[in-house]
Amino acid sequence: MFGYIKVSKGELRIKEFELYRGVYCTLCKVLGKNYGLISRFTLNYDFTFLALLNMSLKDGCDKFSKKSCTFNPLKKCNFCNDTEDFEMPAAAAMIMTYYKLLDNIADDKGIKKLFFITLKPFIKSANKKAAKKYPYIEKIVADYINKQNTLEKENCTDTDKAADPTAVALAQILMLCSTDTSQKRVLERLGYCLGRYIYLTDAYFDLEQDIKTGSYNVLKNKPTAETENYVKSQIYFCINEATKAFELLDIKKYKTILGNILYLGLEETLQKEIKK
Image 1 (cartoon, rainbow, N blue to C red):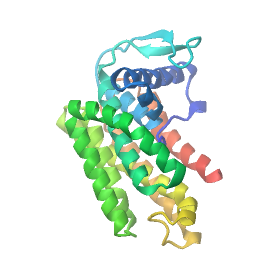
Image 2 (image 1 turned 135 degrees about the vertical axis):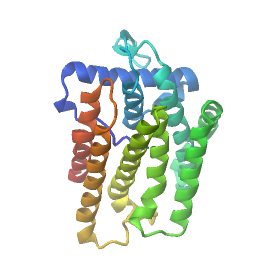
Image 3 (image 1 turned 60 degrees about the horizontal axis):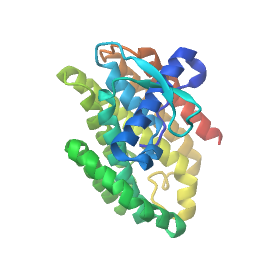
Image 4 (image 1 turned 90 degrees about the vertical axis):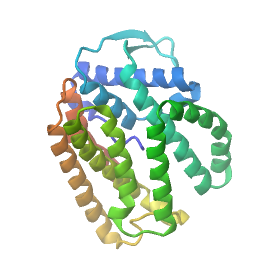
């Protein structure tokens, strides 16, 4: 994932943002504890959303404590005392990072390629640990990458087809947040829409660079004048469908923060990148 699913900070109350940051910091801590220091640098807001969603569907009150930050010992951060709900998102982050790294090694050249090759032994070791604990997630991500690579080799020009592997992968991962059959179906729809949002947003943001480098991008074959309007309409459809699914979830807590991400954060991220 790419870090596009995040809050609209200005629209959150201070205590809500502090809690959101607490989830982010706790996930960072779990990554470091389970997979080593380097794994902390793989953290992004997509997996913070996954952790928050995983927590929100469980009963009970989560307790947070102030502790020193690993990267800045003089700074005190909020950390969740019970980290059970962070284990799955941390493993998903690690597995996704490893497969993304393999993809980068295959696609990039020069210094960037050398950098990724240097990182590979460390990330591979972390991935092995995560995959042993969550083999189902490893299979989801491996299938997703294989399907995506096949479509890229075929130079797929169908936007729906190209976005499908990412959408299906995130749908399957979000389904792990609940054991309830009806909630799983809703999570599947939410994950599919968010996965499609991520793919299309990333394709649009990378379009100019991909044209320069000759890299694959499903939007390349669309007339330039139409690209922005087309992508916007598709992305807003994904956002609208995601919010509809969200309303059907039995959210026990953190609904305001999750709602902020889906109703405000997704569009704000899109608009910020378009202005760039």
